[in-house]
Length: 360
Ligand code: UGA
Image 1 (cartoon, rainbow, N blue to C red):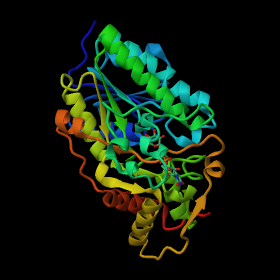
Image 2: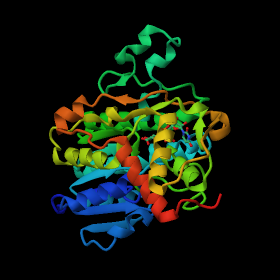
Image 3: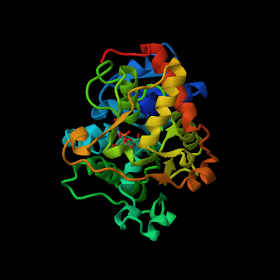
Image 4: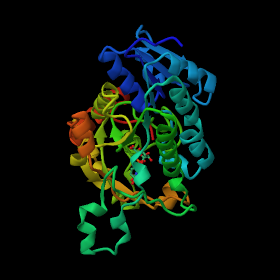
């Protein structure tokens, strides 16, 4: 078996939002990257870099995955369909992409002795225990019922007819397979549970760069650029801890730099200081748009029922606040970028590229 160049990282899903930022970060840190994806639009700017070996194939192709893993010293698997608008409408593809399609990489890492960093999701936590208590119940304030800890929080998904949870269930099963591979067959692994990463190149502008419903940042950007009210699903009362993708890349590289201490651990990667409601995210994005354009926003927001926006079977995660004590201790990691700074950069760029108004 030939040894790969030390420091070479195989990034499966390098052409996606996180993968493109991680590839950039690794190259900046002097690493070589074997980047795998079916698409290259988000990494066009890296294709001429001699340290970026881009290979265009589908991660379900076990033979090609095996070769890419063999050519690297460590593997990060990001390949995934991870957009909530697909969970209820294309459930089979979502389960295939998030469970079955990840198995060849796990097998290759185990057989070739490469450490695997598998991206999972904060969505495996499902709904908080607090959300099952009556409104106004004082016990709802108890942080142990809503702060999400890798070690102690149970994973609470809804019934199977709430098809939104198919994605979380697939990722949860994947995590359990990885844990068992480590225990029974010696796979070296770490798992990342991302909490709503935000940044440039996230998803696509519907009607311009793709079709369908992307995640909330791109939905709101599209509404801002078209001069339409921002859609708040069920009034936008769900809460998220938005995390700058730059902070997330920093955490991931710290895991790769610490294969010993990070082995066999799940890491929450999120910024608890950036917690907000989706309605407040809309207010902040409108403010960023006003700063970028110098205009006053006159179109407001509108509430849309979840069943109308996503179709039947949608159920929301109410609140997702990560306990990041483990990432702080093992990785020496601290998320740094405040939400408004990220939003100003993303909204400002979109206004510069597309102008203040896209045709509706
Ligand atoms: C999604 C994925 O399921 C996770 O796996 C992924 O890790 C996560 O995004 C993430 O980015 O980390 P979710 O937070 O529900 O989970 O994704 P969004 O589509 O960004 O929705 C966030 C909230 O905004 C939800 O409450 C949704 O109902 C709401 N929303 C979305 C709106 O109010 N308006 C929109 O136009 C879009």
